[in-house]
Image (cartoon, rainbow, N blue to C red; front, side):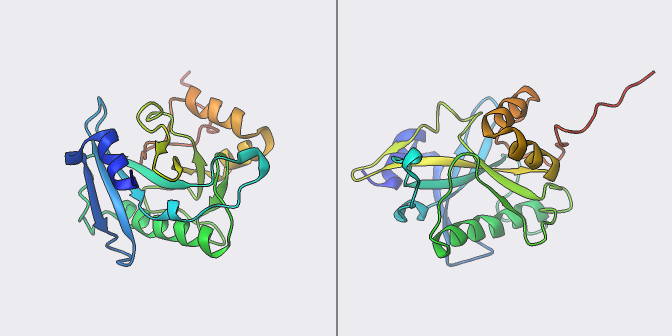
Length: 204
């Protein structure tokens, strides 16, 4: 079983589409249309798992990954006026190229800044870093894919704010994910999300 067949087996053929990245036409992406109780459109790499990541001893067995963004279902894939969508098209290409060019690896808890210096992803997506985590909202559906010759893990790519990343760096990935979840956040892209480090406004 190859990756395409595994995705069809997992979510259904009518929900799987292979498309050319409109910002970087040399990249092929998977789009998964998930009709869950909160519908989502998944934007996923399609060839990253052809690269065997040089993982550390602790992470042996997770050499093969595809990364994804969990986007709102109401986003139109050909909407050139959606700056957030266009930025994600750009970033999913850059993230795939970076890990291959640097001969490095991605795993849960790894983070990467949005540029150097880091800048907001888009006028609405004001986060300026990404963190890779295991699926949370999609935990059950996005279990590893068992292919003929490898096991492919699906890593959620989540936009985060600098202060959230600082919390993760000081407290560790486990505490970050726990607090992220406690604040009712997960891998789903939300243009209106604020940092979980932001103090609540008090009304007196």
